[in-house]
Length: 211
Ligand code: SAM
Image (cartoon, rainbow, N blue to C red; front, side, top):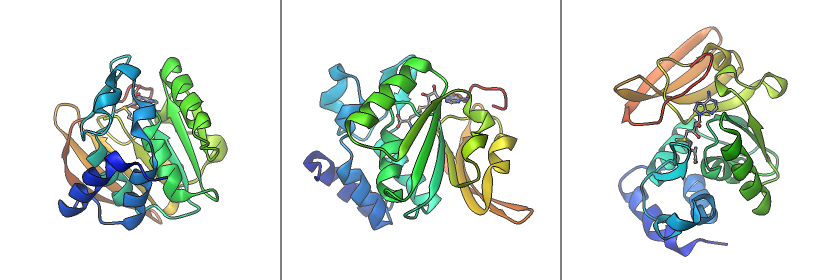
């Protein structure tokens, strides 16, 4: 099913260059963002802005989800680790792209958010998403290594365990910095880590042992 309220947003993001990959556009059109926001904010679900989801946290703006998915160059069948489940929306978009043969493992440190996200994802039938409650800066060793990793909260650096749990040839996207943050794309090639700055961003803080 296509979410008709999302059509003008996706068309604008394509025009403005935030979406270059058709798979990202298709995924955004399929995931009902209104199901992931608190009931009193449902009228704002199809506006491209972050919204409060409680506990001082936010669901990311639509263009940010699009941009991060594009930078990760997601493919069908990928196993992806997300640090910072929040509402579960971003995980659902990634789950659409990687498909039934892929998997999204998403970690959230706030138990109530993890529980709420898991319930929504189950209701919508995202069986290829596993929600873990814990400290995502440590990654999730039992299902490592990952083809792709992304962090949706900003820390001073990219946590080492996440780099270790990334496959050779894998890609990681994370906001890095304390006062001013940049979105960093990291590629692991053998023992080389190639970093590219994708521009300034603003995210909630990454709070954890390696954050
Ligand atoms: N991707 C989310 C969505 O679609 O709703 C938005 C996530 S929100 C911007 C960032 C989330 O990261 C918050 O829910 C916050 O609690 C979580 N977080 C911060 N530090 C964390 C950590 N060390 N481990 C797991 N989650 C963390």
